[in-house]
Length: 166
Length: 159
Image 1 (cartoon, each protein chain N blue to C red):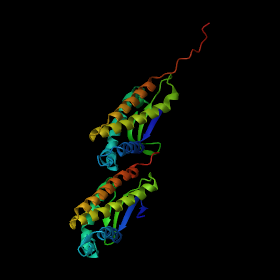
Image 2 (image 1 turned 90 degrees about the horizontal axis):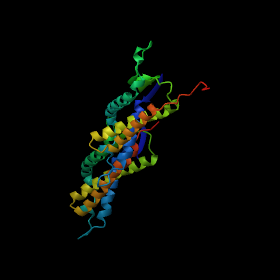
Image 3 (image 1 turned 90 degrees about the vertical axis):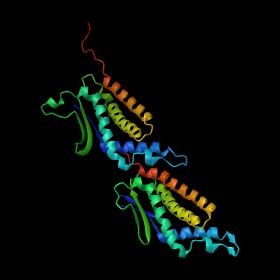
Image 4 (image 1 turned 120 degrees about the horizontal axis):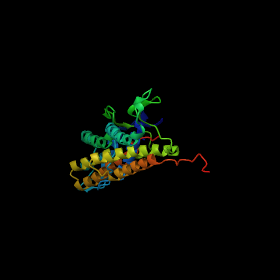
């Protein structure tokens, strides 16, 4: 079994940081940064956490074919958990998968990063859309991350012939 | 430098005496160059200690306008703005992800915003509309500067 886990607070921090980077350069006619209106401020973090729950669910939908049967194990586990303690760290998102034998394990770090990016970009896009700003670039990034994730999930090692032909 | 860091907060503190002194000096600098029938119009234009009650009134508005620009940085802080007989203070969250120079600039802009608003309102009061417009410009610029610099203090530390 392979476990991918992500710290919710760190994800929210990254959403906040990147929203500030964008909002900083969007200025009114008088030159004032629109950071109050367009950035994720501290009071918005609770809302971003809800968006993160949605994002994690969408990611899990892609991973779910590799998570079947986990609840029926002798020691059952949940394939997807949100805001739980993992490895003594509270506030984690946990995905559990069983990769097939031909899965390319070298791609595991890329899968980790694609999941991370997809969740962050989903939150950024949805937040901007909800406040009436243009979240389309972030939505496009999210779609690209999900496409990458699908590609990595579909990559397999070639079967190696273990017998001699003649 | 008018700030210090305590308990996860950055507290900007300004003495009322210093703010009054700076505001008054701005008005005196204008007054000595404005000639009336009997010479420089210092009595008519400068904000002296006798007019301290005007300063106190204008300071209330200036404090609110500055706080509005800092409000998003005060999440979970009780009494983010305090004023007593001697001092005016603004407290914001300390996220430790900024350059010290950003704090220095923010400190300066808060002070300029307060002083320029007081002077702007004073010149409106003494019917010097053209000068009031100049200080309105300075005051607006300082408020915009507060918002723009505060972006650096809103970013979290990434790990």
